Amino acid sequence: MLNSLSGRFLILTTVFVMLAEVFIFVPSIARFREDYLLARLERAQIASLALLADDMISPELEAELLDNAGVFNVVLRRDDMRQLVLSSPMPGEIAETFDLREATAWELMRDALVRLTDPGDRVIRVIGNPFRDAGQLIEVTMDTEGLRMAMVDYGLRILLLSAVISIITAFLLFLAVRVLLVKPIKGVVGHMQAYAANPEDARRIIQPSASVRELREAEEALQTMQTQLTQALKQKERLAQLGGAVARVSHDLRNILTSAQLFTDRIEMSEDPAVKRMAPKLVNSITRAVSLCEGTLAFGRAEEPAPRLTLFNLAELTGEVLEAERLAIGEEDISLSEDVPAGMMVRGDPEQIYRVLSNLVRNARQALSATGKPGEISIAAFTEDDDWHITVSDTGPGLPPKAREHLFQPFQGGARKGGSGLGLAIAVELIRGHGGDLMLKRTDATGTCFEIRLPMGGVA
Figure (tube, rainbow, N blue to C red):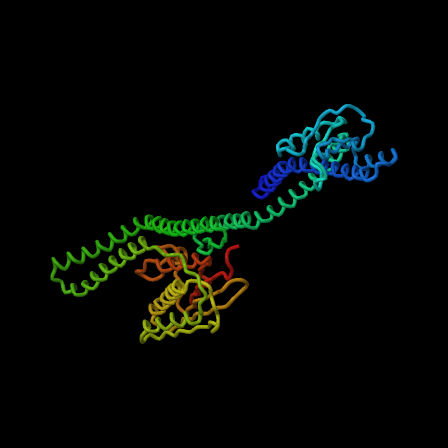
């Protein structure tokens, strides 16, 4: 608690509010002392007016008037004459005189602090202006014990009230900081942790949502950094894979070109009738070499952008994929079917999902074409738990063992003779960018089935 941002803010808020209350306490206690003394002057003036109204009052009544006023003597100056109106025995000599008529704020605060810290009981003289202009001056003598007790009582109440206000204020500010700062910061930290767990998942890139300008700028900067890092990781992975494949590509390319060179030498040096049969082999060898080089270079410089996630109709997208593939089938006896709910909406990048489905369907068509037999390719979709599932299946001969072993690895997982294996490697990368997965569900003599899983929810 104390090591957290909100906990430290709570403590600092309480301390600062208490300091503010201390600064308020000194002027408050000074004002209380001044009001206390003015009240004594007013009561003394009222008591003196009773005597002026009737000169013949008993000593008992005079003592009662002074006791009610809380003073020992009352002196009035009226018409330039100083008159002792009420008097009683003094418990001691006058220790100090305070003139409230011209006292400054600093003097009042100083005298209040002195009186509050001095526990001794002393007799003081207080001078002030009469109320309602009932004379030129009023002067009373009184003890300081009652004044100090009243000041201590008032000070304790002020401190208690200050403590309550400090706690309430600190608690409200604590809640405000947690809602406005701590919670958004924790959200950013959570996004960073989720992104670190799988930087290739585009769903884990933070989407700025903070209402505080500084936090939103931080989220936008983090989003830019994560986007660039995701692309850099993809590029780095491609380059690493490309580096591992260079040796194999060079070896295969050298063998292919060597064969082509032998065929070329035979054509140049011999008039053998078999030259016409060898010419197509030469062309095919060179074509394979060119295709392999182009595929390698294309994969090395590819920069797949992060998917632009949106809701789209999967049935419509599937129809477009199958319609484009029907044009490539031509006269071959290959049928296409789909089992996708008409209103099924999927969250993802429709262009990238189209590329993945098109790649899987095209691979299935090429596998069926190689057999020369009739076959069927089917796309189906359904929902299960919190995922969308899309399957692409065919009735082909199944994948050879070598293709299964390195299925999603570039330059190694090609199932078709002459293929580079880049199609499935790119497809699985696109699906992982959606936070999903592409897997081989089944392959045997009766056909092959690939399954795509796309998560419905976002990253917690």
